[in-house]
Length: 135
Image 1 (cartoon, one colour):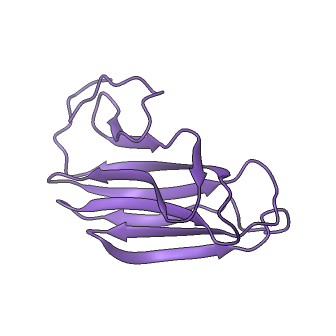
Image 2 (image 1 turned 90 degrees about the vertical axis):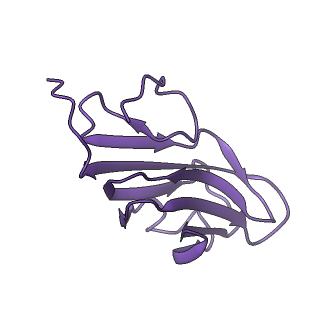
Image 3 (image 1 turned 30 degrees about the vertical axis):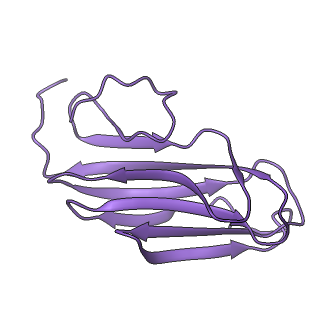
């Protein structure tokens, strides 16, 4: 599981050298209609405990709809109506991702067919992985 991927690799689950934490960043994406996948990965024999966070860097009157799927079953989601005024736009979504599960974080612009710049990231504690002893 230890990864030597650079931090800038988008949409790849990256593990710290000791396998105690993992993170993933989407890089700049554009929410559109139909739904766009921002993050996607599959766990192995470990659990991930942490959060997924969507952000929209520029206020807009468009609605940003986000959804999180585990093995293609939607488990949570939301709709930020008018991202200029929504207080919860940067709130993390707490998640436990079970072993051998595919997580997919997707978003779409629910107001128009125009591209809306957005980002997603995930930070997790890894439970049940073999630690490497890295200090």
